[in-house]
Length: 279
Image (cartoon, rainbow, N blue to C red):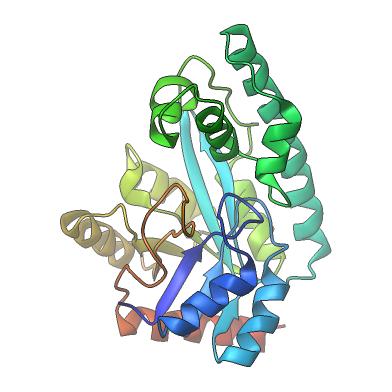
């Protein structure tokens, strides 16, 4: 188990735990440096930081911004920015509005196929969180249309499935620039899942990308080694985390389950210190 986990989701996006509960779970598992990286949402940062101060868990501000390159989804993680950044809040507000519109379009496609989901029920499942496909998947399960969330994605709402609706055309370069303007550093999330990671990495290095998420629950040992090599090749920082969504989430992995080497923690802390010194 690792002492650092820089990829966690709370119920402010598609996770199942509150920010405070995530911090408590981290403390129980002796994870001392975490970041809550909700999708296009940072409402969980300050509550987690307040909880962390009482439990000796350092909480780095974080976000996972969903972007696209062609038909491929590319997620950009941001760390160390000011949680009060007006620039960040405005940009994320606009992205969440686009998420809401996309959810309505997906529900309409499902309705035309005979899957009658109540919009209010989907919103209730999302709760305070930024609405996304996992919430629609849970609604499909609860309505008895599919056996589980995996089936919902694989048969209906996954990428390029019958009820799939593409995200708005938000580029990763835009996310990187937003994070930089807000005083943080950026990392390409789970690059091992990309079809052509080298092409995208080279494109984003030119745009100012700072790091690669080398350590992730979906990276095999060989993929981890390959992404680590690419981070070294392009002189990028390394980050890592479990991508835990909490109990009953889309992922069964728990906080701290993905081992992240101490050298990565040291480098991340040094970069955060550099950012603070430049504030």
